[in-house]
Length: 199
Image 1: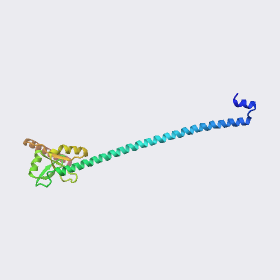
Image 2: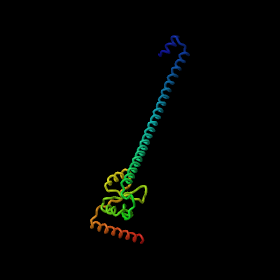
Image 3: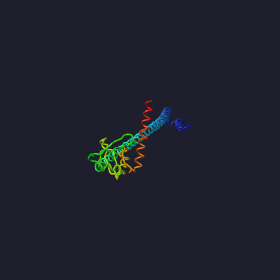
Image 4: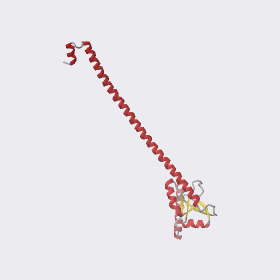
């Protein structure tokens, strides 16, 4: 027998009052259960939003980091380009146009030419000078002393572009004949290919 039943039996509490007390107790228990459920739902929603916020913050942080790296890479590229231009402007030996044409090929296909003095022509042939690309003018080929070769290669790596076009190895007469023979063979292969394409 419960305490309520004992109180009703003893006449200390009326039956109606006991039922009201039981209903109130049940209502409070139900409310407490509902509050727990509501509280757990609110907590779950709060955790979900916090997880979404963390994911958003991490994604934004990654995007910002990537954007910053792109900006830094672009700044480094601009510095390298500026350094290359300064080096070319400061160290080029063919500031005035010479009277002797020097032909060269940087890709094995197109023949380019630069006008130099007779001494520069000899130094180019002997491998003491090298030809570079001027990115401000596609038809201007600065001639620089070969001592800047390593610096130019370093700038090429930073820029991801080809700056260095031509450097002659000092040739013996036999090397020159071999080169002409290779050129004749190359021309013959081009003619054969052209003839084959026409048929």
